[in-house]
Structure formats: structure tokens, C-alpha cells
Length: 432
Image (cartoon, rainbow, N blue to C red; front, side, top):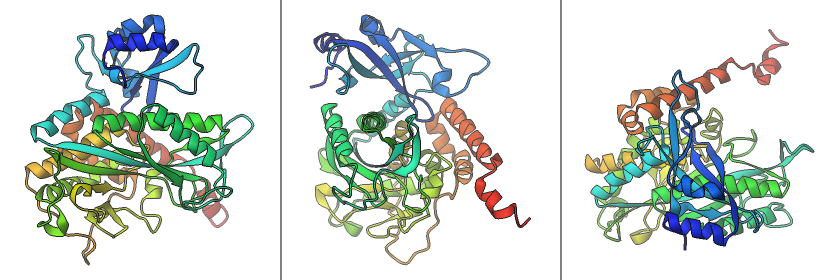
């Protein structure tokens, strides 16, 4: 059982011979970062007395410096299994607060925690599971990744074709030792591609686990001489990597998405929740598909996941409702990828779905029928334009997160456009 109080954290650290504690947090762009302290400083750290410049969180230096403080969540204390048992290293996931102890406006974890209050007021519980895909690449003698996969296996292949089986096993064992519940793991369809499925839990716990998952997977891959990449589309000729999110609403212990008498066995709340998400799909895409490269994955295969709508069997829809009903009824959001900020993504998905319920929006027509549907934005520029127009999403993010996120992504989009790509030289240099 994980420790629940600061005092229990101190005792656990002593019991496990911890020497260093990493105070981990996620910045606005979704990067997992940390400040390391020795165990002698742990008591001060638990009292939120470890400070840093807010620029680390926001991703840019402003005219004025702001001191912010890391406030550890004691329930997230874990000792890293791959470190020595003597002089061990542990971690605590932190919120970011100001000098008065109030949540800093740029803290994405605090934003998600605040949104859970709205969920409770509506007497709902939300559980989220994640199907996370990634590639394992070889490295050069200096340890730098090269775009050469470690095997040529395919979907659900096993050894000797699946050369990543041992690495993936160690990843699962390490994750489980750190409190994860892993449903399954397997080789995916592309060479060197893998998937690990995490069991559903509350949004904050899942956001913490997604952030930790990427860190753990890359660490274990490195120990096997490989590089784990969550880049959405690293290989032009193969499918990319996504992060499908399994969503389920509960009310009084009963699945609130299911209704035998409803259309397709779905409840009124399910229809409204789906409508709320699809109604903000364009702006959401800027958050759940945050890279220029994210859009090389969307719309570039037979698994497009780009149509604004839902279905039971249309592979092009961004939302799929699997055939199980009753307590197994769930909604699968299929377009996100693992490069997104999990705290922002889950916050906005939950809040837009709740808005649909509060407004009583009807269930949209299924894309299993012959209907014309719009697609999500085709590139990061289009997605950012949609985000700028969505006042509801802007309000949910707050001024600090919204402005810093958009500014950073605009610069990324401009940088991509100003870069001379080798394709342009190959295409135009000789003929023009």
C-alpha cells in the first residue's frame, strides 16, 4: 500500500535506504521534469519549501522572475526498482504552488484536480484506461537513437520475430512494481512497435501514470541498449503510434453510459458526453495531438481516426463505442497520441463531455451510417487556429496555460515552415 501522509513518506524513505528523491512535475507542454533533493531535505520538500523559477514550468523567461514551489503529493511516493537498494532513489509527483501555497496558474496537475470538483458536483465518477503505443529503435555507439527498428515483427508476433519481448517484459514488471495495473502488452503492427495497455482508474491517477509510464519505458529501453520513442509517426512507410483512451462514466456504482432502451444501448448521458467531445473536437486536437509530426499519423493510413463523430465499427471515426454493453460499456477516444500533456488532455476531454451532459446534447448520428462528417484539423496550424476560436476551451485552460501553450506551438509551427526540408531539394532543385 502506498504511503498516504508526509510522515509515512519519511518512514518509508528511511526503511528503503533512500538517498535521493526526485520531485517530479509536468510543464505546460507536457514534458516530465524533476528537481532532485537528498533525503536530508525531504522534510522541507514535503512542506513545499523547494523553489524554482516559474520559467521552468512555462517554457520561457519573462521580464519578471516568479518563484514557485513544488508541493509533493505523498500518495505518489515510489522507490525506483532499477536503482541500487543502498542509496536508493525515490520520486514524488508534485503540484506547483506560489509562496502563499495557492495553486500556480500554470500548474497543469492542479487544473485537472480542480476540474474533478465539477465531476463530483454532477455526481459522476470517470475512469480512464490507456492503450499506449511506442517504437523501439536501435542506437549508435554514442547511444543516440537512429531510425532503424530493432525487429521486423508484426501484430502480436512473438519471439524470435519479436526481438523486443524481453525489454517489454521488463517494462511491464517494473511498471507493476511501481503500482501500475497492466492489462496486456504485445507487439504492434509496425516493425519495432509495441503497445502496453493500462487498466482504468480516476483521471488524476491516470495522468500521473501516463507521465510516469513514458519515463519508465524509456529508462528500461535504455538499459536494453534501445531507444523508446513515442513520436507519433517516426517511419513514413508504417503506421504511427497513438494513445487510445478508454472512458467510462459511473453514477452510484452503475455504468452511466449504458441503457438497454436507448439508441444502440447507450444512455442519454453517453450521447451527450460524446456530443460534448465531438463539438470541441477541432480545438481538442491541438492539445491531444500537439506536434507537427502528430498530423503525419492522422489521416495517413487505413486507420485514419480523423472524422468528428462516433461509431461502433467505422475505423475512420475519432470515437469508437465497442460492442460490449452493461457495465462494460465504454467510449474510446482514438485520435490522441502519447506526446500530449496528459493532465491537459484528460481535463479537457472530461470537461467538454460534462458540458455536453449539462446542455443535454443529443447523441450524434453514428458514422456507421452513410453520413457526411467533417474531419479534425489536418495540421498543427489548423488545430491552433481552432483552439484560438474556442472560448470554452480557452476558459478551461486559463490565461497563463493558454497563452504559453499557444505561443510555444505557434513558434514550433513557424519553425517547421521556415525549415528547408530535404524533400524540397529532391523535388525542385534539378527541375527548377
